[in-house]
Length: 212
Image 1 (cartoon, rainbow, N blue to C red):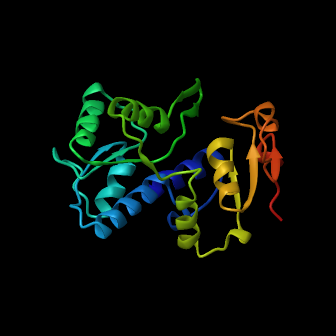
Image 2 (cartoon, rainbow, N blue to C red):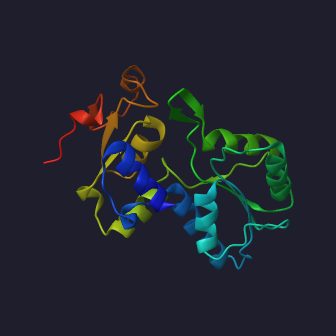
């Protein structure tokens, strides 16, 4: 949830923001599923592989996330993933549930190195079910547009900052906004140099970035 992101930014990165300025892939996913349910007259029931933030976002939209007959299977990052959870997701999709993924990030940085992220789990369900998910998070423009709407800003007034070229930077490029990549996480400078479209700006660390 936004409060967890706010606490992490403040305690670990010395960045002060308010809850209203945080828009996660979980919030965007819940908003999309809610809109889809209304538009298609589907029951607000979902089986969710994910952590508390995603489940709370779904519940805030009025979804029952504890059901054996879901209209939606929503998959995100789950550090307590089990075979049983994967099986329930695959069976739900086989029985007609709409498959929605939060974001395609395959890896997430940690103190011990790169670990599996939401995209790795989503791909497991994709492979087992034979069904491609509707993906909500970056590099899709849906999450960017919803975030801009919440902030009340134009894309010309913001910059997309991230450490993953394939998700963060491509989201900005796809939506026509300036981008800044920091080489402190997923993508390396050597990898980015091979890309056809380059970020607008690049830094080795956000310590090098000054906002005027």
